[in-house]
Length: 393
Ligand SMILES: *Cc1c(COP(=O)(O)O)cnc(C)c1O
Image (tube, rainbow, N blue to C red; front, side):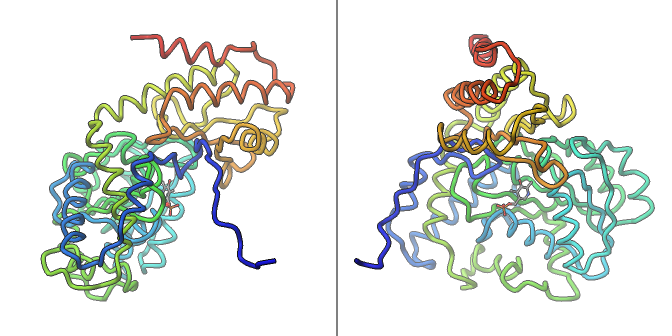
């Protein structure tokens, strides 16, 4: 017998977890187009188009807007490592796993980090930041807009002025936000922002869109010490993405095709239409879950439409439900992270996954599994409640 494995035949899943999300066929087809060189005139034109589309997506005029090779965490590390210099005071909002990761990265970059904390599921109010800003006098304030571990939606605009009045630059994680809810980089004066391709952009994982304001670029260009990461040094990357086209590393050509197509589809739909679609399916799902007696973890008024973090009803086995969803129905949802491990389900309705058939399929499958687990609810109530939302004008 041959020792060579058979060729790949991945199952077709319904991806309703915290990412990756379902990928539209056109995006997968883009991945399979002919590979050209990373300095081929065709590829350089695609890079320019992608940069222009990313500016539209982020609603910014920032010249330094590009896609970092790597997943969302690479974008996170690129913004943190470039903006934070050794000895810089850095204030980080921590109300979930990803705020914690920001603080860790800022420390690795040599920052003197102060964490401001809120209970998981809650968000920061301007008053939470006033005292620490005055005390710490940070050079950089870092915060997560869409905290994927809790489903909490952090308002950015209302804290931006405070941060700038205190003389700091504002760094925002929009990995789960971008493409699902409005991100206004220029209007909100965000100085450094990053995202990932596999959440609401519905592209496979592997690229991280980032953007830097002129003030952030000025801080980066005047650093005393080199960025500790060569690969993520934005001043080197800017020479490749800018007019000089200086070779830095071999770009992931076919991933760039895929992201180009994914962002193109979102812009063709229209950003506001796309956000409204996320809201609508969230409302249908939330109505369905409520009628099954399932509670949201994030505070009311601050729930992300694209990431529905809910508490697992008591008496229901987390492992059973998630593994049977996958085995019998082909549906993936996420479990709890960090302090929510074993207590939460995270249901993503991100990008191409935010469709009525997914909401109704998940509710039908959940009703079946919850009934098997002895959870009490009125049979059919979840689907009926979701359909009632869909039948509204
Ligand atoms: C997923 C995620 C990240 C990390 O992105 P990867 O693509 O997994 O590296 C960072 N921040 C938030 C808020 C995320 O949801």
